[in-house]
Image (cartoon, rainbow over all chains, first blue to last red; front, side):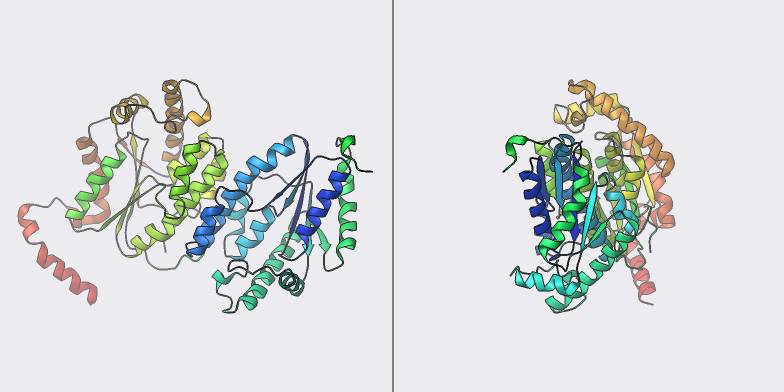
Length: 220
Length: 253
């Protein structure tokens, strides 16, 4: 069995950047690493896109379709490499659904049951940032904020940016609550990337004991 | 507000769902679909609006499931969740609005088939029950119980062969489709028997010809409508006009 390392947090928390840097680091040290991100499975992403465009999604179907997508991804891309001894790095895992779906009004116990097939990760990082930082990074990256990322379907505000701030604020509180009940390693992520990475590496090192390394892959 | 098995749907209004929800469950070949048609006819002739619904008919995911099934590639959990999305979509967009409008909803299969399929594929009963906790409790669930030997002959008579999924070939119970069909249908039957107690199914012997089955089904449905659904004679039919007007006055007053 390999190791499962999870990166969670708001959009713009820097989790994806950190995940990619960790993958590079582990690969350069000769570990077999597999990187996967939410929504990369092709199974229902088209249905979700269609449903979003036509406004057909309710909190329940939104939640179930994402769970379907995750289950497919899990069974194809997470479990097999994990069984094969890889370090599987996940950009978003079940906590994304726990936070997002409960903010949309789904029952927390119901959502947890949907994902009960997913094992607890060996390490889950929660990159905690303020909503202001999240928004600032989002704008700086010139990514367009989508209707659902802004939680416009919740009717929090007519303005996209304002809705984004309020929705991300609720998500942040949901993540913070999860950090109280679940084994999340909270990383203050408002600090510079290198500093954050240093903390992340230190947390990951103990997990590497006993994992095989391919010496041929190690760079000088 | 209708009773659900678990936590209600988020955003489910407190409105009164006047219509009746009648579920027909049973294996492929148990006579379910024929019975839905007969029942629909019988109810509509007596002036009750009927909406029928079944699995895999949602606009959101219906097509997607059909495509996924062709490839035979989906794992059990993924399939179970996708069916749940399909069901939730129909519940929210078809079943509940129809009940709110006062229609009778005839469901050609409901969450029970979905739970049975998931459980025989390795899901725990608890997981499946919690998954469908948002489903509303039907007014009546009729289970058409038929022996696998009968189902086999009906399937061959209807399709000329045994369907991959109805034979549970994805479970690898046997490479022989005939044998797999029996093993799979028996597993499902056992699960339905357990659910029959848990969810108070009314079981009707589906091994008999449709006319006899229909007689029993009517007897079960009748009490839901009280006196409004007694057998109608030709004379009564000609008198239906004034009855409707009286009904309309009562509704507006």
